[in-house]
Image (cartoon, rainbow, N blue to C red; front, side):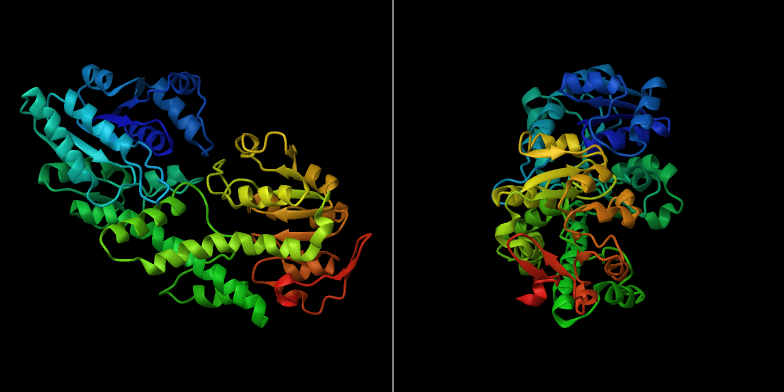
Length: 466
């Protein structure tokens, strides 16, 4: 098929590269010429394993080409399908900013000359497709043009770090349509990716498809916040959240996914989509009280984790050299949007600490936020050698596989692990003061003394000394 993808961001590039892989002719609309130039040179502007090569293959095979605007795309190659993959960032009130979506709809209405299926792939609130349709119709009226078209919803379900697998081997593809023709086109387009199309292709009305995206992300966010709040209770009552998780996960009604305790979720999707769902509820006079609490727990979790550090060190945090492992909001991505590391580092600096940080791929993004206030290391080992104590904020595999005997180079022998990367009993045996999330029962009998020039503290979880 002839496909136009509007937006060369995360969703747009993954969508274009994967469709091109299946022998579709894909035109990508991107108004940032510098980004187009970089892409033509094989440089993808963000980290996603395998995507750079896939884009390069599409360009080499002449299955992917770039243009600067919608007019060029439709003049060059009248598409069968247009995917709108533009950003929908949060406004201050939590609502989704749809200005780019409206602009795309207007440009499409000004340019289409034959039947076109317009697909919203961006995450958008319920009712967006209806408004897109109205905008296109108005532009056609102004042109006195009688051009048939359909608008559909096809939300993306891509995990950063595993997006290509999610797209090419999806557990489901959700399409919201109001015409049989639109349904048939999307079914044909996605069929090469589906092992069992009858079960995996979920066809529904458009409002249901729009809501499904928000519902899915809100459910996953809820599981994360639930486990994080439960981890706080585990520390209070002397339980191990990892054992609790195992006991829950074997229940088939619950399963094992998204049950890891930590310092909360971040990224471009969960925070934004949770807030947008809350705002939608307010618009319809239906407070989403459960989702509001999910959001509140998530923000509270990172603050409580930082409080443990201050409870432990007090005023002696001033001029401490604090090592940070992990800056991205999750492994296998360079995305730092809403990353807990941003809040933790900012508060450390505000308390007078010196910070040296390392991340396998997200360093350059974080440097833009903390240009002159943070030292950025080239390796995990460099951090350990320089730091008084260590904070782990992203569960990269290289951190989890790290030789813990080398951690003895930390001057204070203290580790705050926000992602539970290590076995607490093993860490205790090695002589570390290891403070984590929901597994601090293993420190209840610890007699190790933490010594500084000003004070001596018993190494205990702060939440148990309160």
